[in-house]
Image 1 (cartoon, rainbow over the protein chains, first blue to last red):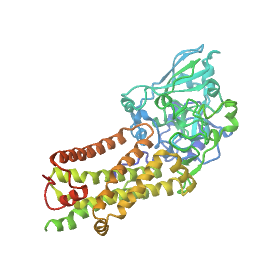
Image 2 (image 1 turned 60 degrees about the horizontal axis):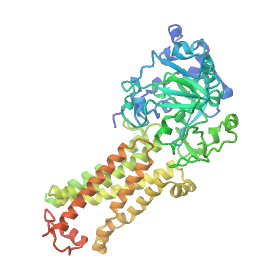
Image 3 (image 1 turned 180 degrees about the horizontal axis):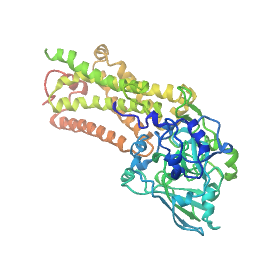
Image 4 (image 1 turned 90 degrees about the vertical axis):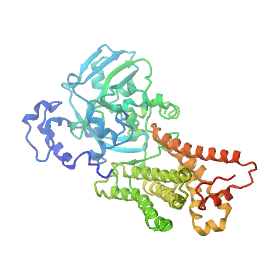
Length: 315
Length: 227
């Protein structure tokens, strides 16, 4: 244990200012092809993973984001093991290229699409979102992505599409955690179609201005900031539109503990722990605990989606 | 060195160093010394490490009797008090980390947790039950309590069960590790059950109380076989 080396050397972490100053230099969505022509920034990591994006202050919180080591070193990604350090240690076995996404179900446009094709021409934006885990810890994360609605609209969902189901890659050779039966693989999550089309719902491809680290769900993950983190499925390979509510991984594993909606709600405790407050990772000593906000602070934007619903019953 | 000296100057100090080592490692982690790290959530890491270390010492304490009987090393009993006290020590640190660093001394949250969260109720009960055992661990208290000391210290069995239940219940999904601990405790208890039944069968009349059996065992005889 004493010999454990830091997983991300401090030299590898580029200060956000560097990213923010260079985003003006980048054009297009994935800047990988342009990497050779990038001006070198002293101390900056290899440029091929930098993304071109625009900051979206309208959808960003003012709280300071967590450090990259925290966001990329403290993960729940059971496909790589059940403790928080396992994903950063083992996710290098995930091959994110080539990557394709299969679209099925109640949509006019279905089939298998290369990720590059799905991202082509898609403007990326950075949004600083709160992230609240069902385990009562939280982060503030500068994601880079685009509204899920932009992507879903391309597939022309039919009027029967009441829900959207997402599936994570299943490949125990790349994801060794899938050899254990801790969850039913592959991981499946889902949203109601109006939740999926909500402007806050984000398809994420990057973090801190760069391509998403594998342990954070590369190459394509969902972020639904007003729901507990387990709804924000990682490493997506399939999107299915359906008329019926999808059966989702954690709900199947423990239905009385993890609901389909999983909206952040300080009033409705997890059966085994309180959801009234949370600890912000990386916050100063003895100042990390803070009250949890309804819908994780996004109530003004999303509470109307659940008008008239008993949120205790549909937890 | 005779046996007593070896225990006093060698074995006990070694056990003490081993008992302090987890704490030293955690302190190094908190101060980022020698490459040790507590990760992105040091509070949870400390909380879990202290809890698990307490469980480790609790199980080690319960392993002393089977080992000394099976290996014919009755003198191992001399190490048991220190192991038990380390279990208590780490349980106290575990609770302190939870109260001070995790709850940030929010006593309203503490009260709500103890009342409303079964796994915390259980863990807190285990800690409270450990307290009288720690307080009566001195030679003076052993003398004063006489045979009642042994009855009191039987509390260690329900405490161990509560502590493992506490561990099992707070795990979100992956229960393999708590189940490993449950398995080990089951083995240690099964040993005692079998021994108790064997003794019962060997004795025509079960005249001896448990306290009397202990005193006979802590003597110099290798095995407490009574006929």
